[in-house]
Image 1 (cartoon, rainbow, N blue to C red):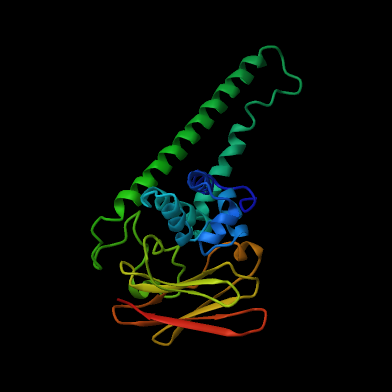
Image 2 (tube, helix red, strand yellow):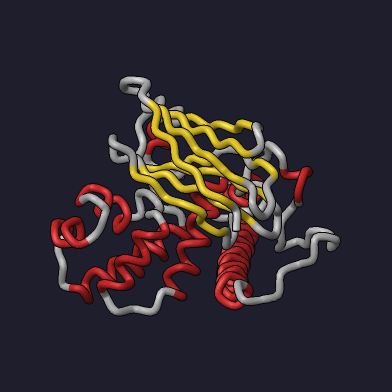
Length: 283
């Protein structure tokens, strides 16, 4: 359900991107001709069916002569929700509230006239509960947006500092083999290198200075495609397992890296098993 119906985070991003496209006056074909992304990809991005790559957002901002800050902040939020799969508790808390409000509007099957007051009270209680939930979501969204927009320029935490509620959940060796989105190392990372494969898949090597780790990610992939990242002989790999993966980012687990470490990524196509590799050095 969450894959077919855009989440609020994806819906906000898609609406902002549609507004930018309207300002450019370009059709989907025109966008495909002026960017590195296909017509079908842009249709998915603008309809909120999948989260676009960061570079797609930047290219659309450039075409619309729009500063990148706001859209990239919306993109960070949408990507964390979409590909993070990182906070299942956040996604399950909201639906769990629905049953508590549902009994209010349902009238008793055979109640006395006095029961009408209880029904109206239940409706008022349900309305209050819904309003409170909406307010909480709005406040949370605004807080996260401010963090992403304003917090990117804040001083980095020292390695000795303990992870905060909004910062990374691990550092260094403690991150080895962990998911970068789960550990919040995927917020504001450095892109070491990018590569487009012969099959059209996009690959990136990423590095978090705060976490002291690197990883790779892929998108525009096919089921069975595989990506492996290696640094100092420690391989970490990920595979596209289903259609949902093929339409989203797929991340390898993290490996510990530092300044000067050479990070290598190898992509193996499911169609013929051929492998393409590229590498970069942590700066």
